[in-house]
Amino acid sequence: MTVTVEEVGVDVVLPLRSAVLRDGGPAAMPGDDDPATVHLAARTADGRVVGVVRLSPAPCPWQPARAPWQLRGMATDPAVRGTGAGRALVAAGRELLAARDADLLWCDARVPAAGFYERMGFRVVTAPFDVAGIGPHVGMLTPLGAGGRRSS
Ligand SMILES: CC(C)(COP(=O)(O)OP(=O)(O)OC[C@H]1O[C@@H](n2cnc3c(N)ncnc32)[C@H](O)[C@@H]1OP(=O)(O)O)[C@@H](O)C(=O)NCCC(=O)NCCS
Image (cartoon, rainbow, N blue to C red):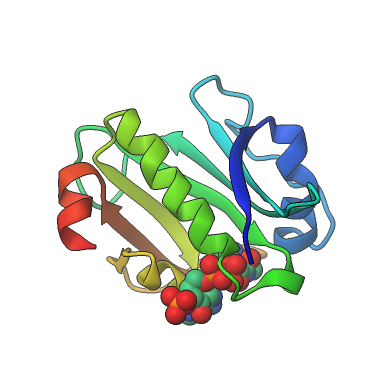
């Protein structure tokens, strides 16, 4: 399926983030309105939002980096899973962060999604840990820029 990924306001990402990641509950995260935070949405040709993700500069808990960014709030519509919307969002995020001279992208990955991030070039760097009310996670990261290109 072809999607177009674009930078959007947080109001565009919240409905899908809420439905997929918060069981329909409140889905705002600290830092959503920070000027450095970037929200991306993947849309189908008819304009429907089928995937969202957020990127923001944040120190990586596990590896020193010059310009680390965190990925959060990754979600795709269950109706389009496995058709490339998630990949398109991560690819667009990598491109955008390369332009911002970021050198590392990291995330707290839900364990059932870790395989997706591995497909996207991330590696697991922690033992599983629990996030209250959500479930088991692992820390994952991927180099960006020249390092990222070498590893992909
Ligand atoms: C994880 C998620 C974002 C993946 O989105 P998606 O739109 O299905 O991803 P894509 O279709 O672009 O998949 C890209 C590749 O990853 C694979 N993949 C997708 N989800 C996977 C998973 N959970 N485990 C292993 N591989 C997975 C796909 O098969 C595809 O493989 P390919 O390289 O052979 O084509 C989506 O399943 C989701 O929203 N899950 C629920 C919310 C969630 O857990 N978000 C992450 C929070 S940390």
